[in-house]
Image 1: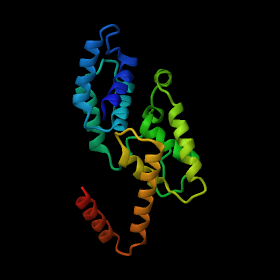
Image 2 (image 1 turned 90 degrees about the vertical axis):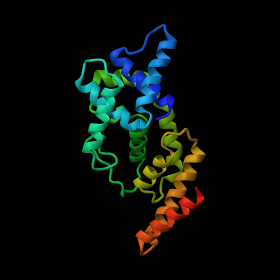
Image 3 (image 1 turned 30 degrees about the vertical axis):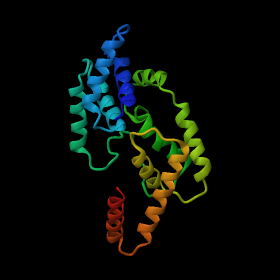
Image 4 (image 1 turned 60 degrees about the vertical axis):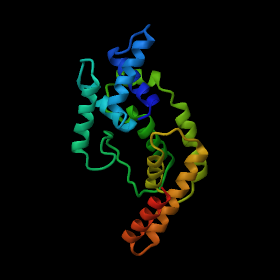
Length: 208
Protein backbone atom coordinates (compact mmCIF):
# COMPACT_ATOMS: atom_id res chain seq x y z
CA UNK A 1 0.00 0.00 0.00
CA UNK A 2 1.03 3.59 -0.51
CA UNK A 3 0.87 6.15 2.30
CA UNK A 4 -2.42 7.67 1.09
CA UNK A 5 -4.08 4.25 1.16
CA UNK A 6 -2.86 3.69 4.71
CA UNK A 7 -4.46 7.03 5.61
CA UNK A 8 -7.79 5.75 4.26
CA UNK A 9 -7.45 2.53 6.28
CA UNK A 10 -6.71 4.50 9.44
CA UNK A 11 -9.73 6.74 8.74
CA UNK A 12 -11.89 3.63 8.37
CA UNK A 13 -10.73 2.32 11.74
CA UNK A 14 -11.01 5.75 13.32
CA UNK A 15 -14.69 5.89 12.34
CA UNK A 16 -15.27 2.84 14.51
CA UNK A 17 -12.62 3.01 17.24
CA UNK A 18 -11.48 6.68 17.49
CA UNK A 19 -7.81 5.84 17.10
CA UNK A 20 -6.79 9.35 15.98
CA UNK A 21 -6.42 12.51 18.09
CA UNK A 22 -8.74 15.36 17.06
CA UNK A 23 -6.32 18.23 17.65
CA UNK A 24 -2.86 16.70 17.52
CA UNK A 25 -1.60 16.42 13.94
CA UNK A 26 1.87 15.30 15.03
CA UNK A 27 0.53 12.33 16.99
CA UNK A 28 -1.74 11.44 14.09
CA UNK A 29 1.22 11.43 11.69
CA UNK A 30 3.06 9.08 14.03
CA UNK A 31 0.02 6.80 14.30
CA UNK A 32 -0.41 6.66 10.53
CA UNK A 33 3.33 6.07 10.09
CA UNK A 34 3.22 3.16 12.52
CA UNK A 35 0.29 1.56 10.71
CA UNK A 36 2.00 2.10 7.35
CA UNK A 37 5.24 0.45 8.50
CA UNK A 38 3.29 -2.72 9.39
CA UNK A 39 0.81 -2.85 6.50
CA UNK A 40 2.68 -1.32 3.54
CA UNK A 41 3.61 -4.70 2.07
CA UNK A 42 -0.03 -5.80 1.77
CA UNK A 43 -2.51 -4.76 -0.92
CA UNK A 44 -5.09 -2.07 -0.18
CA UNK A 45 -7.96 -4.40 -1.00
CA UNK A 46 -6.64 -7.15 1.31
CA UNK A 47 -6.15 -4.72 4.20
CA UNK A 48 -9.64 -3.33 3.68
CA UNK A 49 -11.09 -6.81 3.88
CA UNK A 50 -9.01 -7.63 6.96
CA UNK A 51 -10.32 -4.49 8.68
CA UNK A 52 -13.87 -5.49 7.78
CA UNK A 53 -13.35 -8.91 9.33
CA UNK A 54 -11.96 -7.35 12.49
CA UNK A 55 -14.69 -4.68 12.78
CA UNK A 56 -17.48 -7.22 12.37
CA UNK A 57 -16.34 -9.28 15.35
CA UNK A 58 -14.36 -7.01 17.71
CA UNK A 59 -15.20 -3.99 19.85
CA UNK A 60 -11.66 -3.54 21.17
CA UNK A 61 -9.53 -0.85 19.51
CA UNK A 62 -7.17 -2.69 17.10
CA UNK A 63 -3.40 -2.50 16.97
CA UNK A 64 -1.54 -2.91 13.66
CA UNK A 65 -0.62 -6.45 14.73
CA UNK A 66 -4.32 -7.33 15.05
CA UNK A 67 -5.01 -6.40 11.43
CA UNK A 68 -1.84 -8.17 10.32
CA UNK A 69 -3.15 -11.27 12.13
CA UNK A 70 -6.37 -11.04 10.11
CA UNK A 71 -4.32 -10.72 6.92
CA UNK A 72 -2.27 -13.80 7.73
CA UNK A 73 -5.43 -15.76 8.55
CA UNK A 74 -6.88 -14.74 5.18
CA UNK A 75 -3.70 -15.74 3.40
CA UNK A 76 -3.65 -19.13 5.08
CA UNK A 77 -7.17 -19.99 3.95
CA UNK A 78 -7.16 -18.39 0.51
CA UNK A 79 -7.36 -20.64 -2.54
CA UNK A 80 -7.84 -17.98 -5.22
CA UNK A 81 -6.68 -14.41 -5.62
CA UNK A 82 -10.09 -13.01 -4.74
CA UNK A 83 -11.49 -15.43 -2.17
CA UNK A 84 -11.32 -12.72 0.48
CA UNK A 85 -14.40 -11.10 -1.07
CA UNK A 86 -17.33 -12.17 1.05
CA UNK A 87 -20.15 -11.44 -1.34
CA UNK A 88 -22.05 -14.50 -2.49
CA UNK A 89 -22.05 -13.54 -6.16
CA UNK A 90 -18.70 -14.62 -7.58
CA UNK A 91 -17.42 -13.27 -10.87
CA UNK A 92 -16.58 -15.80 -13.57
CA UNK A 93 -13.21 -14.57 -14.81
CA UNK A 94 -13.81 -15.96 -18.30
CA UNK A 95 -17.25 -14.38 -18.63
CA UNK A 96 -17.68 -11.52 -21.08
CA UNK A 97 -17.70 -8.10 -19.54
CA UNK A 98 -20.92 -6.34 -18.53
CA UNK A 99 -21.42 -2.83 -17.15
CA UNK A 100 -22.26 -4.24 -13.72
CA UNK A 101 -19.34 -6.66 -13.84
CA UNK A 102 -16.98 -3.78 -14.58
CA UNK A 103 -18.43 -1.76 -11.70
CA UNK A 104 -18.06 -4.74 -9.34
CA UNK A 105 -14.40 -5.18 -10.28
CA UNK A 106 -13.55 -1.55 -9.55
CA UNK A 107 -15.58 -1.48 -6.32
CA UNK A 108 -13.87 -4.66 -5.19
CA UNK A 109 -10.45 -3.09 -5.65
CA UNK A 110 -11.02 0.56 -4.72
CA UNK A 111 -14.01 0.45 -2.35
CA UNK A 112 -13.69 -3.02 -0.78
CA UNK A 113 -16.05 -2.26 2.10
CA UNK A 114 -18.96 -2.30 -0.38
CA UNK A 115 -18.38 -6.04 -0.81
CA UNK A 116 -17.91 -6.89 2.86
CA UNK A 117 -20.46 -8.51 5.12
CA UNK A 118 -20.58 -5.63 7.58
CA UNK A 119 -23.40 -4.37 9.81
CA UNK A 120 -25.42 -1.78 7.92
CA UNK A 121 -24.70 1.04 10.41
CA UNK A 122 -20.97 0.54 9.86
CA UNK A 123 -21.41 0.57 6.09
CA UNK A 124 -23.33 3.84 6.43
CA UNK A 125 -20.41 5.41 8.28
CA UNK A 126 -17.99 4.22 5.61
CA UNK A 127 -20.21 5.48 2.79
CA UNK A 128 -20.35 8.90 4.46
CA UNK A 129 -16.53 9.15 4.34
CA UNK A 130 -16.12 7.55 0.92
CA UNK A 131 -16.37 9.45 -2.36
CA UNK A 132 -17.78 6.95 -4.85
CA UNK A 133 -18.28 9.40 -7.70
CA UNK A 134 -14.73 9.28 -9.15
CA UNK A 135 -14.92 5.47 -9.31
CA UNK A 136 -18.33 5.56 -11.01
CA UNK A 137 -17.14 8.19 -13.50
CA UNK A 138 -14.02 6.17 -14.32
CA UNK A 139 -16.07 2.99 -14.85
CA UNK A 140 -18.51 4.85 -17.11
CA UNK A 141 -15.64 6.14 -19.23
CA UNK A 142 -14.03 2.71 -19.53
CA UNK A 143 -17.37 1.11 -20.38
CA UNK A 144 -17.90 3.66 -23.15
CA UNK A 145 -14.83 2.21 -24.89
CA UNK A 146 -15.20 -1.52 -24.17
CA UNK A 147 -18.96 -2.07 -24.45
CA UNK A 148 -19.94 -4.25 -27.36
CA UNK A 149 -16.45 -5.75 -27.51
CA UNK A 150 -15.44 -9.25 -26.45
CA UNK A 151 -13.34 -8.15 -23.48
CA UNK A 152 -13.54 -10.61 -20.62
CA UNK A 153 -13.43 -10.07 -16.88
CA UNK A 154 -9.91 -11.44 -16.54
CA UNK A 155 -8.60 -8.77 -18.95
CA UNK A 156 -9.78 -6.08 -16.51
CA UNK A 157 -8.38 -8.04 -13.56
CA UNK A 158 -5.00 -8.27 -15.29
CA UNK A 159 -4.93 -4.51 -15.95
CA UNK A 160 -5.95 -3.61 -12.41
CA UNK A 161 -3.34 -6.02 -11.06
CA UNK A 162 -0.59 -4.39 -13.13
CA UNK A 163 -1.53 -0.93 -11.85
CA UNK A 164 -2.24 -1.94 -8.24
CA UNK A 165 -0.84 0.49 -5.68
CA UNK A 166 -0.31 3.32 -8.20
CA UNK A 167 -2.24 6.39 -9.23
CA UNK A 168 -3.23 6.02 -12.86
CA UNK A 169 -5.12 7.99 -15.46
CA UNK A 170 -7.79 6.74 -17.83
CA UNK A 171 -5.29 6.80 -20.70
CA UNK A 172 -2.76 4.75 -18.71
CA UNK A 173 -5.42 2.22 -17.75
CA UNK A 174 -6.61 1.77 -21.33
CA UNK A 175 -3.04 1.36 -22.59
CA UNK A 176 -2.37 -1.37 -20.00
CA UNK A 177 -5.76 -2.99 -20.68
CA UNK A 178 -5.07 -3.23 -24.41
CA UNK A 179 -1.61 -4.63 -23.67
CA UNK A 180 -3.13 -7.30 -21.41
CA UNK A 181 -5.66 -8.17 -24.09
CA UNK A 182 -2.97 -8.52 -26.76
CA UNK A 183 -0.85 -10.66 -24.43
CA UNK A 184 -3.73 -13.02 -23.59
CA UNK A 185 -4.71 -13.30 -27.26
CA UNK A 186 -1.12 -14.21 -28.19
CA UNK A 187 -0.98 -16.86 -25.47
CA UNK A 188 -4.36 -18.37 -26.37
CA UNK A 189 -3.52 -18.54 -30.08
CA UNK A 190 -0.24 -20.35 -29.42
CA UNK A 191 -0.62 -24.16 -29.43
CA UNK A 192 2.13 -24.43 -26.82
CA UNK A 193 0.85 -22.04 -24.16
CA UNK A 194 3.49 -22.95 -21.58
CA UNK A 195 6.35 -22.16 -23.94
CA UNK A 196 4.64 -18.93 -24.96
CA UNK A 197 4.43 -17.88 -21.30
CA UNK A 198 8.09 -18.76 -20.73
CA UNK A 199 9.11 -16.77 -23.80
CA UNK A 200 7.10 -13.77 -22.63
CA UNK A 201 8.65 -13.89 -19.16
CA UNK A 202 12.17 -14.04 -20.63
CA UNK A 203 11.42 -10.94 -22.72
CA UNK A 204 10.08 -9.12 -19.67
CA UNK A 205 13.18 -10.00 -17.63
CA UNK A 206 15.47 -8.77 -20.41
CA UNK A 207 13.51 -5.52 -20.64
CA UNK A 208 13.82 -5.02 -16.86
